[in-house]
Length: 510
Image (cartoon, rainbow, N blue to C red; front, side, top):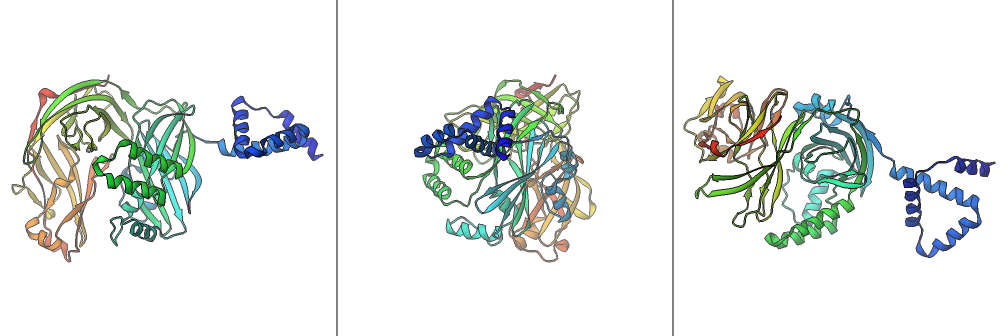
């Protein structure tokens, strides 16, 4: 009776050619070469046994190749954010929670890595930014593991490893595939994370997608496991080469990370959920000549092409290509520019990437902040020269907030609040006029404070799209008792800005 059920099931089973090929390939991989002939001979002699074997292989193949389809129709909850709220975690993009939920889907798929579990909880995609929310669970104490392994390989470590450092050692790589062909790959992304317990870590990674995608595509997400001796040997070898290390050397490391990491593949289908994203590919080229900041005030000439502009619910990007320069020196890619639209609205932006090798072309994305009105005709990129910043008594009393501070001839900062504790200062502010998001120009009443706290480290400015506010945290090197009685004012370095309107690039959006 069981044999008849098996043969009936096989007779009624309809497989696509692609599935049949996958099954056959799976069988070929599983069988040892010396046994292939005898096994296939047995399959020919015993059809009933052959049917049972293929059915078993079929079950395995379906499990290996089946994928979850995500429609980005919204999630009721994203643990990364809800836990951050509950535990008062200071993380980026917290202000975007309600908006991100609208463009997300639950995933809840786990892959097993070496001595840990990698679970993708949610994925959000608004047509430009693809955010992955995931959990790392280990039997080991995560911080202690980092300290121990760091000591083994002589990493620079301190006893106080913060949660941002921990999440930074648990990054992911993203591959986007169309019909099995990789059309996008990226390991460089923004993000944040925090520890839920000694053994559990929550992480968010946010990728700017700079390619046109089909309505249905696959994404392969790989968690990179740094706790691998072979990988560390490769990294040490590259470090020993210093400036002689090539892109080929770096690619070998990433290939090893992809090979050794835990992988999860899902499908995204937005064919019935069209996301409103404005994208133009202007292909505008310009030669920009600027005078840099610093003692030498070097004049730099850059050949810039504006490849792409995307305006999306969760953020906006401009994609540039900076041409190679035989005389260029390592430094930031095209960065000293402001963005304004035809209505006079200015937009803050992230800093562009550091360029280790200016002798090769570089394509990079710059995110710019703020709501772009739907009837905006164009964006204008205005380069500028910048001189050394000065204080010039540009302070305001914390007790008098909110208050305005002059930032340059073309801009102001509106400081909404300033919270002082014995360990740090948290400042919330808005920008008006021609500004970027360089909150590190904010400063305390140094003459009274510097000898007490020695130095300050600055968090990256966090932008809240809902309120148009930035938040930055300045953390003291050493605890300052009774800080509220000592830190009374806050200021900003004035910028000496010279606009280069004659070199402006106008990007039509319509």
